[in-house]
Length: 262
View 1: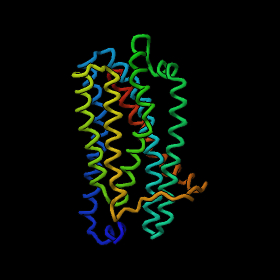
View 2 (view 1 turned 90 degrees about the vertical axis):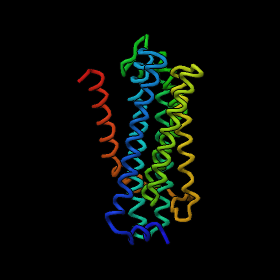
View 3 (view 1 turned 45 degrees about the vertical axis):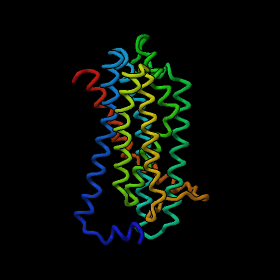
């Protein structure tokens, strides 16, 4: 029995709740990760280091916004294809979304790495905070592709009928991030670099957990060789644009409110 057949035969209310709570928990955990980094850095390294991490966070959030942009756009088309019992098209949409996101993120990361200092100062860094911004953001950007992969996979896996695994993957990331932050900052005294390493390692582990979905019999997520189509690319970016705009606008509003204390 396919994922769509299972969904079609379930009562609406329990089906809705089975998707609602894992999605809500996942979004909350993503927000908590940023808060956890700040708490550990402020207590384990100092206020100047915390200021450096806070300056780096908006740049880091661009990666999240892009993964939501392409992930939500692609997952919407993916679900439509499955609803039409067009499994081959669903495979193409998933593959196209995955590699389109990687292409965009790689170009962005390379651009940021080559202009790290000027971008950091644009976001508010100074001579005191820049060393911390550089130390944190350099590691985050080098492995930032895994952060976007985890986020995109959680979206597609949720739409592929496995919201619990999507939630478990994000829970794994959050819990491991807390443990590693404590280990790297307070035990090994790695400072801001330890915070970045904790984020990277926990994210990669969460992505590995999500990859278990590919071994599930009901999984429709498969990579195919022939997938590129300009019309689909345009549709993915157009459908996902509101998610990108909403995510980054809300984050910037919170960041500005925190920065200016209002």
